[in-house]
Every structure is written in C-alpha cells, then in structure tokens.
Length: 282
Image (cartoon, rainbow, N blue to C red):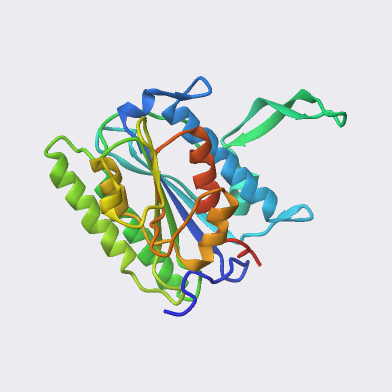
C-alpha cells in the first residue's frame, strides 16, 4: 500500500493510540529513579498524555486529534484485562484522576538550574499484581480496533504500544501463552484500513543486553527479544524520522521494539511510538 501509516491526525480524522500496560506482580520490581517498573511506567504514560494535550492546544481548547485507550493486564485480578480509560484527548485534559506536585529542574537563565514545583495531571495509577495475560489484552485490543475502524474507516491506522517486563504467562505453559500472543498480534497487524495496517510497537523493561529496532530474529540472543520481534510491526517510512529524532537507528526492515530498555530508552521509545510519525499532526 502506498504511503501507508502516513495519514495525518486531525480533528476530522483523529488518530488512535492504545497503551497496553503490563500490571503483573513482577512490575513491582525496582527500575529507575527510585521507582518500581509499574510506577515509572505510570509516570511515563502520564507525561506522554500531558505532552499530547500541550501539543494539541489551540488557545484554551484542546483539539481532539487523538483518541487514547489505556488497557491494563494482570492488575485488578490475576488474569484481568481492564479498560482503564478510553477517551478523546480533551476529556483527559478536562478530567484527570488527580493532580500531583512534582519537583522539576528548569534553567535559571544564567546557566544554572533551579527546582520548581509543578502540578502534573495523573491519568493512570501504578498497579502490580497477578499474571501476564498478554494474548487476552491483544484480543481485547483487536476488538477495539475493529470497532473503531468500522466507525472511522478513513482515519489514520491505530497504534498499539505494549509495555511489559516479561513474557506472557497465564499459569500454564509459557510457550502456549507466547504462541497465543504471537497469533493475535499477527491478526491485528493484518487488519486493513485506508491508511494501512495497525502498528504494534513493544517496549520491554528488564535488565540485560538491550536490543532495539532489529531487522532479523537471527540478530537476537534471547527468547524475550525474539518474542518481541515476532509481535512487533515493521517500522513504516513515516515513522523513521520520529525514530531518528529519539536517537534510534532504523534500517529498511527494522521492527518497532526495544528489549531490556533502560529509563532513557523507555522514554525515547514512548515518544517515538506516540508521535503519530514525525510531523503528522494537522
């Protein structure tokens, strides 16, 4: 398909971002800046939504150029898949869960930094409990995407950003859970829309050798990275510039994933995935 995944987000044809958030028990392990994986993930998603709100301000009004779903898996019960919140951007802006005071370092204008208090709207709280029903989360996502495209066939192809710290696990065999997740993710990546196929980008939080945007499974040394490769979309041309902007190197067949991401890579990857491509906001 020519120029797939290149349609601009606009108020007339909003984009659709789905954050899939692993909320399993292991997300309680420590990660960065004194926070657990789950706390850091919530922080990054909250910041990302706030940045999207700021980018889409028109005077006092937030333009609804994107619809966001946050889907948690694990979390509320061992095998739960929860629609934490699905709303247009302006609704997030108008109705945060709460406001949190954060310390932020800003320039003092004389080459130094000063710390100021900043109020940040919170839309998702950290949760870490239960197993990792990733395939079920993908199945629910597939239903959401099919419903969206039925109503909005001319809109940009949806983007799924899956954030997890491990392989799928539902209490039985990990191989079966992995195969189920691979199977559903492929079904999603084969859905057709006027703007091409939905994109799945994966960010894995862990420790060990980092891999990102690889072109072949043969370049990967561990099962985790190989699994992520299988469930990630090839990065379309329209997103290559967004990847470069975040200091990621892409090649012609690169898939959109990062394995064993540290805090900086995690933030850069979410910026890449939520950008709607490089300059695609109209």
